Length: 58
Image (cartoon, rainbow, N blue to C red):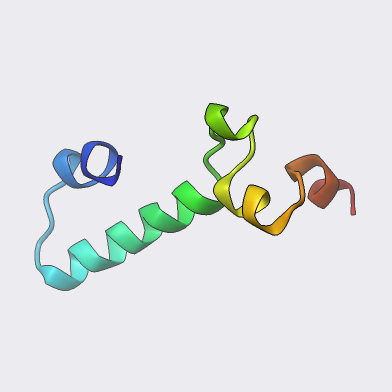
């Protein structure tokens, strides 16, 4: 997924630019992007055992 949604779509000026953007994507993927295979949860929500609506109402 990271290759198709980040790496192949962008040109990086150097190693550190690539590293920064790939780290940003991984953070997005794990903490913001919902996954249908995880019952519309993020990987972080599934791993830590809470749902987005519980977090937002707290």
